[in-house]
Length: 206
Image (cartoon, rainbow, N blue to C red):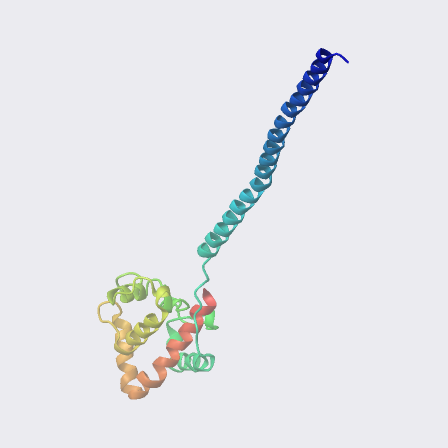
């Protein structure tokens, strides 16, 4: 075979090999790009899911924060029953009713005392100055009795024992009468029982 022909064949084979090598390199680049795109698509839903979970947790926290439990008025039932008896024994129902505690029939000179613990007793007839208990509580720094039921009960007992000549002159006279009749029992036995009854009344009326 002629040497020229051999050189020509070798040259052609070299060109073919070079072309194949050239064609192979872009294939690597294409595969690498495909793997990158696949990775991006796989990670994206994970990110969205995490954001949704965070949003759900935040919503639950807000819901938990904005839900408030109602105020519960605790009372001793046995002592409250004694208070009901004492209220009737002293003829307090000649002037007042306590409908939520079962004293629905009585006098109407004074208001219903169902919510006396919460300061809501209206206006006593024959006395001046508007809602007596709410003004009495405010006088001692308690604007919202429901926010501090313990202090409200203490002030209610103080009111029954000492009265208040400016706000409730009639009740003050009655308190003095009870002290003379009952002595220490008025403050130590009757008043605690009546206050407990009024706590029960407030609990059932709220």
